[in-house]
Length: 329
Ligand SMILES: NC(=O)C1=CN([C@@H]2O[C@H](COP(=O)(O)OP(=O)(O)OC[C@H]3O[C@@H](n4cnc5c(N)ncnc54)[C@H](O)[C@@H]3O)[C@@H](O)[C@H]2O)C=CC1
Ligand SMILES: O=C([O-])CC(=O)C(=O)O
Image (cartoon, rainbow, N blue to C red; front, side, top):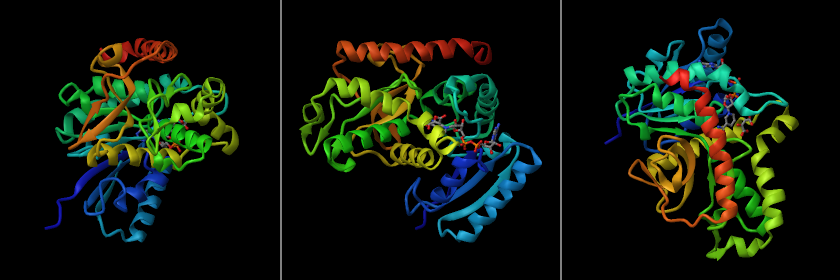
């Protein structure tokens, strides 16, 4: 028997990321090729944005996706999030050249208070939320705090783009396909302070650290390349990354719902106190997923260099959290 459709709410649906994301969701890339979906699309109540959203929906219709069981346009989160099973919170202002993601905090934080409250009021009690809009960790924290009746663990932030960027850099360095690499992770904030960590990684069973055997490359090339990749893309394209961000959002939710079969990935999740990260801090951790639940990988040794890096990214997140205290009560 055909599965009942899942409701997927997407905000910022007429934006750059939306344009790369919606078609893949409707194609079954998010929840599986046997899972019908209903798209509930939110844009700001602005004539131009709503008109653009209409245009995107016309194109979605024109694809005649067999798995698409419905698509609706909204200007109010209270209708867009109604009974949503999955919510992808993309809509927010992107940064331009010379800005850091935390410079967006003031412009975007309010959005996530409103949307967290709306999710709390009308979404499925088991809604799984991914925040993409920057600064993603702190926005996810705000949304989580604004939705006290929903499970805090269901609010997550996107570190998967950083994870995928790190995978790709490591694969190129060791001359092996990304598919050969396991046990890579990215700790902390989706910002240049993030700590991409290949100390535990293997490629076809061999230790990546030994294959690379170059701490100078790690410190002076790998970490800055991954950490500043978003800025490099803005510099090259004049716009922030969109297709790769949409792809990472698909990867994040796909793996959360459908499982990683014991493999590691990276998700920004509210800390449970693991690795000394204060409870509730929205932090990138290595996780495995099964039956729609993630588990933080436990028992990893944190050496002095890694602890220093983790402390730096935690400090930044703690400062961002302090800066939005007035919004989360
Ligand atoms: N976490 C990550 O790895 C990444 C995050 N991003 C972030 O994703 C966000 C979206 O990026 P783009 O799609 O490139 O931006 P965009 O400007 O092309 O699209 C954003 C859309 O969101 C809409 N929007 C704004 N406020 C809204 C609200 N309150 N409710 C619903 N819709 C709203 C806008 O009207 C616009 O259409 C930015 O904050 C960007 O920095 C981008 C790349 C990677
Ligand atoms: O850098 C930006 O502003 C967009 C983003 O988050 C990324 O590409 O990682």
